[in-house]
Length: 302
Ligand code: PSU
Ligand code: MN
Image 1 (cartoon, rainbow, N blue to C red):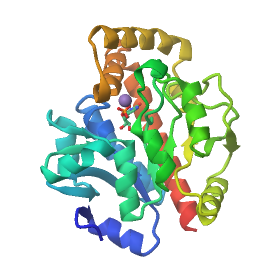
Image 2: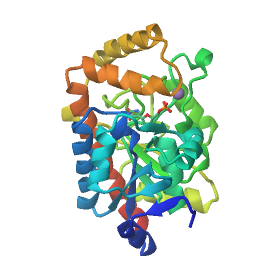
Image 3: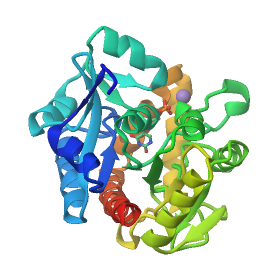
Image 4: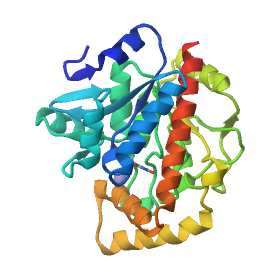
């Protein structure tokens, strides 16, 4: 095992006995939601994974180790602490070697999950190609990581702070299957609609698990992006969100926000300007993704 990897005993045991495990990220806790809802959600998501037959594995970097499985106290720290590094792939070496506290993005979480042997990862939304990327070159390392690392991601689709059309084009170029559960349209996080057809549709966890097994057995490395539309009751119409997104993008530009700060800035701006409605939707969809992730992990182990 890698000298920088530390897997909690319960998870190690599960992996050794082919018990389903679902990886969870920590950037969403430290940089994606306010305290204390972030910690409550992180805990509730772990419980959802358990209730659906799998073992949760929240991933982060602590004291020079890539940690797979966190204690309740550690989840609290990630939710509360102000100086947590947002760790994508390029940040991993410095945060590990300097023994800093690091919350892992989708990209870094996938890489560490793969090091541990975990195949399924549930989150809220992934990074993608930003609006205006043709001039800014702002394309999330989440996408390049999906090309290389064989960990499937369950998300609620792509948030429309990004350019959904360009993100789907990029995924096609990189050979990453995109499959939506139970509907023909690709969802856009807060909304079940996006205006884009999903490249693929499958309706059951068993079908998705079969596709994953087949992909990896064919020697095709990399991820599958599994889009799970937000439950009806929590949906926020795309047109309502668009107003807030345009204002957030404008504020980011005026404040000269660049690089890794862009996504957290937009997420926080939108959360603050939607009176908690977006936060409630965010929490609901993450739990929903954790449930689907566990079901797919169970089907994959079967
Ligand atoms: N989108 C969300 N919520 C999030 C993120 C994205 O709706 O919390 C986080 C994830 O951790 C994702 C990261 O991996 O932001 C992408 O950051 P960037 O765009 O800087 O690659
Ligand atoms: Mn970026």
